[in-house]
Image (cartoon, rainbow, N blue to C red; front, top):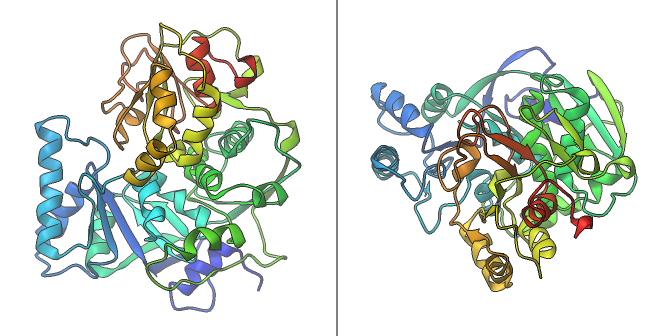
Length: 419
């Protein structure tokens, strides 16, 4: 029977010939991930079970990235708990400051998640790794605790939706705009517990950074996962990074899908998601006059070197509006160093922005850019729910790095062509 890439990966990790959508299966995992918010809960549950060892000390990654450098005593306590656990059980991949980056950018960069993998993470944006051709999804801390003991997790095999993109991208249009457009079309519940499979000629032209952005935001449509079949772009990315062997999978041409959607990307311009849902999208040309107080360029969605280069291209020779705060957050130490060496920091600083160390920070209203009452931010992050970045009366507008940078200069929401 023809199978999707998702069905093939899950079948391979159950030791069976095939699985079917709707079936409950116990799956062997390749990597389990948790951060400084979710890991402490999993650690507490693991230690209550009085298990002498984790299932595999090289298949667990602990990444303190939400409130680091520690912003207060509570966050310091959380990370200290992770540090002690990693030392006690010999966890190889505990990332301390200086090595630590935003988890969903760091793990692919380090070659820890690979095509054909099953990856679970106690963070909803674990679906990012689907860009590599892996089945990856967010789970609860209890699931992580169980997986650290058994090396397995159970799933209901999801149905798949095929999204095909053709045509040529307009200037300044990125993977962020394609996924915002898609979510705007199907809604935040349009792919609930489905695997969103992105394919087509336009996807094949995207760099890995844009593919990761698209897979990252699959959860914003309610999806269980997002996935893109591996191709030469994928292999070029992972070949020099892989820490272990991997296997690639492709959907069969006649595989069955729950739905199929087709988009002409030449008709898509840079998108802005208005408060308070990622589905509330409109073209930047139709944004109207929306003054802003802050612009954030970073996060697991758009904190990669390609994103910073795009922002710097827009900002070069400009100064941000005096009423706006610009915060730039490279996602990992290597991206930070690369941006610095390429002179991007000089562009950001000359524009009167600031550069933060790698952290999730303002994305979840943590720190390094929390919004006050009534303030508005244009952000390259992934969510704009009520109170997501700070005060309940604040507003977050989601956009790509070019739009965020241009808006910082304009003092209102706008596109780079206005500069």
